Image 1: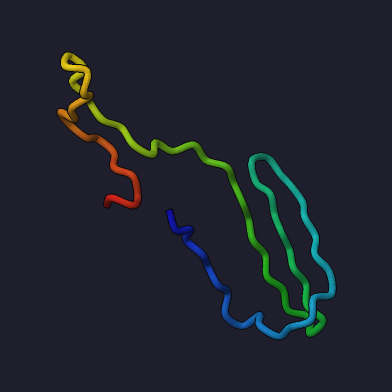
Image 2: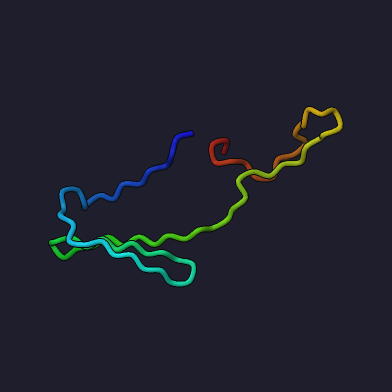
Length: 76
């Protein structure tokens, strides 16, 4: 399964002065400071989401899908 990657234009070639991490409530913050006094700040949170939900018929042992409620991203 391929991973989704994000690139952040404007930071290529910059020299990192320091990286700082902090946390507050449910967030983790990553602050990357460059020597030209610019910075990138990223906030992270862990959220639980339903990846897939479906109703199955298990009477035959084959687990036939009767209805899908939530589809995985790769199927959408």
